[in-house]
Length: 148
Image (cartoon, helix red, strand yellow):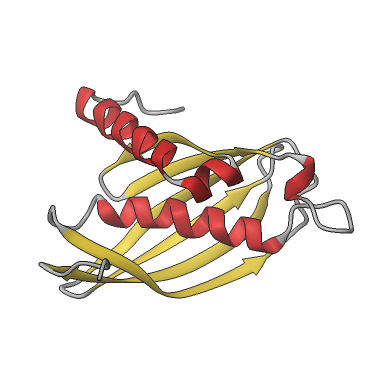
């Protein structure tokens, strides 16, 4: 049973969707926002032939990018406005191949500290089976910018 999104959650989801349209990398990879809530983000990816490696399954780097992007959005929902985050660590376990179809990445914040946000992200095949699980740590700095 899927929880109905509140007005604020719908607005947050649409704002993230708009920001992703501005990101050349997420547009290139084809990531799409399903929903954004406090401490959680769910993205989708419709697998295309150019996502696959030589063995006909989705390349692990694509799955890692999907986990990183989804988890970053979940992390942003837990930090004060103006806080910049950057991936410090990403560990991913590939549990089964992803042959195609529509896959889903579901990220949750596990802990928010003063300087770090720890998240997990599960990636599911179209049939609902768990294909990969990632643990990610983001550095968070208020009043600093990633831009030079």
